[in-house]
Length: 305
Ligand SMILES: N[C@@H](CCC(=O)N[C@@H](CS)C(=O)NCC(=O)O)C(=O)O
Image (cartoon, rainbow, N blue to C red):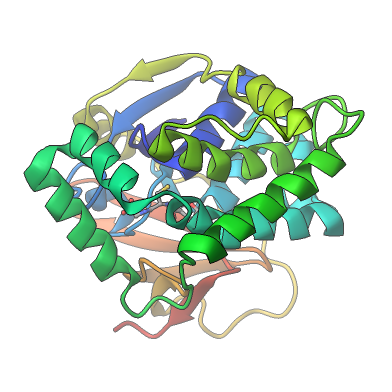
């Protein structure tokens, strides 16, 4: 698996830890923290968010489908988002929704600016802030700030602390998807604020240490050209067998885009649709035929824009 990511990306951290946990060797192709991303756009067709994973000429957008691929490669059904129970699904939705956005809003603006300046420099900080402001314009999610954000993080920590009493992991004795999905928003808060988690939540801080120490496993740096070559020299894998009533959109040109934020559409021919995934074919001059996989949930499939 090739992972297109940047170091500071919390969603990428979720996948890096899953790969490390399962000992799946992976190739890392680093992306800039904001578009333009000529290093990965030719593969995805312009999908705006990070991470993106790739196996040959199959490209996976969003950690829902990436986690499914890791689960498949590692034969680890406990990492597949389709297998989570209702309580874990609710916790994941809170972690990756409200808490993910609150994690930034809960950090004081001065601290945030300091972190950005150290990471991106002055010009980079201005560009980054403008990019993220643009990305959130028209977004259907709203990022809480100040006291509201702090309250959301605190209430999540309290909930986690109670759930972790007497357990090493949220999933019990071994880490499961709910652990990685709950970890990365707190990692975002810790890395942007430069402050460790509140030690008052002892179960959480011990668990956080445990999950963080899993590490990234066998990671190898690659240049974007190697990822392009991997796509060019492979055929997309066979499509999953169709089930149920055929959808009249199969075989037509469509645009697929996230419906919440970073809503840049990817266009191509709709090849396959299941309850949870859609696959779009892109015929490209430089890389040949590429299949791009998206989750159904949180994504809109529309006639091409
Ligand atoms: N639902 C997406 C969310 C991904 C996401 O929000 N990623 C952030 C970085 S961690 C992002 O793409 N931010 C804008 C960007 O990097 O351009 C997933 O699970 O992959």
